[in-house]
Length: 203
Image (tube, rainbow, N blue to C red):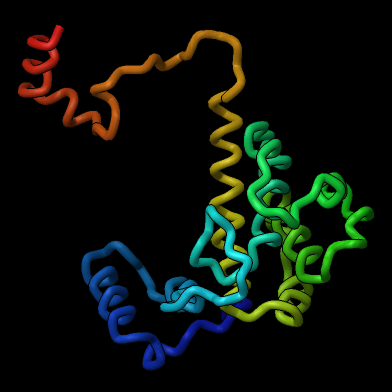
């Protein structure tokens, strides 16, 4: 069984079951098990703790914790714009300075240190995330929070690596120049006969 027990099928919301069943029937999903775990973080109401992060307004985790994770992910991925920006007051320069060295994180809460340990491992050596870390997480986070922690960290890590890959502050001319017809378009749309005719007329 997974390290996080899936929500029993009969205890999922009817709309969740319908979505999962449709996905399995269509071949989009092979099994529902991962979805039954991700469903923990499907919440209808926004937590009323007064500390929502502007990038994650409906998140279960608090704003400062999310900001520390966002900045740490940017550090790990080499995303300079995201390393430099600050979106939540609690992420002071003194707090941010300790993110690169776990031994300096003593002033952070246990939740914050655990979440940073998790994102460090997820970004650098996810095979080292084992039973012990999940046991420690479960002592300070709800299951729904752990699921959101994992999915959010995964999204952050991928985004920051992509932004680093496009060399946001590069000084050379862009490899891919701006072309207005490329905005929101697919390859098939741009290379259809009708699209080619429109582009020729526009030029």
